[in-house]
Length: 185
Image (cartoon, rainbow, N blue to C red; front, side, top):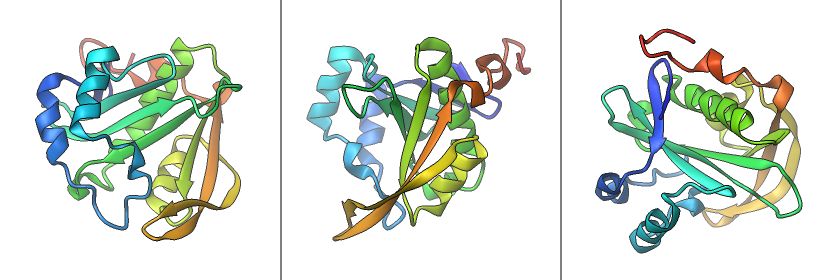
């Protein structure tokens, strides 16, 4: 588990599946809901590797009382590159605009750089998804450009913004974790 100041990131447990399958994918704000799995696939992935492997992983974002707020994870977008792509999603609109995703992205980014021999993380987000773009920018990800009409969603093509963070641009893991007594490490 990664303990942040206001949230934690943890592996998905079998007991979480029922709640996760009930979470609505909310409207126009959701651009990349394609990674959401049906229950059978999700259970199979949990049995196989706990939804955590070298090429992809998913963690739940919880509050300090272990209530589910969202998820965040990574995947390897292409076999010839060492880059990892980050995805994230808040489950409930009430969790928006509270800094939850900013903290989660800082935690996961620092963790991946600390544990993996990679030099780059990236985020692709729909151009119209201003909240996701702000989260990336707050965490130090730099805007690299636009992939025009690269995403088909909600019956139309959308532009996608590309953001990246290099190892030397990321806060160290100790700076974003809480220690055992609840203070910054």
